[in-house]
Image (cartoon, rainbow, N blue to C red; front, side):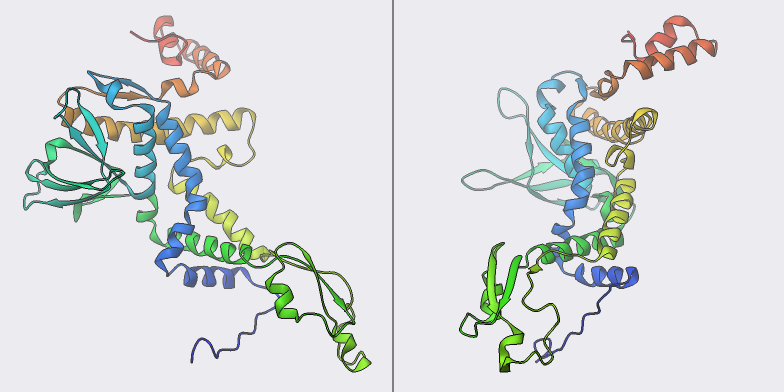
Length: 342
């Protein structure tokens, strides 16, 4: 019965196109998508660390939006475009409780008419709660006008890229899960079978029956028989190349300059970090602070300016350029970040 009676003939070399097609086929399984997090987690980790370093301003905001909360929120937004927190005002102090799962109901397009069915996780069991949207912080990275209540992450927008990355990770995981080690063919026919030897390889060296020994004649035995043979991870170059290309694509989807991940130094690295802060971290924090200010009924501000505070050389060059362009001295000092603008 298929696929058990199917004979597979694997080519000696794999083309780039074949690798893409195989990866797409592997990615059709839901479980493979989780394996694709390997490449994607590079970008998610940078979002999380960048947000964790932000400064928080606003009434009681610092006690609510701790570095742990900011980091978790940014990572969730990168993963699936949603980060949901229940605003618990029942105790002596307002607290943000992360929501495990949620359902939204409401017939009005206005969010003020929506209700959330929340599942709050706990060590000894989950708690279910119904809350009005005013008591729920629902951060969304991107939305579709057809489903404004659902957030979309970078890979939910570019579905094919996410599935392809998942397929590549699944293939590499399958390759890495195979037995590895060394086998040495010997002329002793009484030794264990080849299948049993490979099954228990686990990085060791095993003696296996030699093809040369059967019938005491070489016959069709390979010329390299009796030599040491290594078995183990050896993915085709096309698979490695495709994974490298996907890394660049996924970093671009998430707004992370590739120079921050691969080798980069000097001016290129500093400019990449500036672009990452200005074009990715700052906008994500702006989306978060808008939702927080609206639901907490007080102005909340998240600033990532301190992320580049250690690059004095870049700030000095910026200051020099601003002054050379005719800007007032005090204004140039404040904009360059050499001092904090009041």
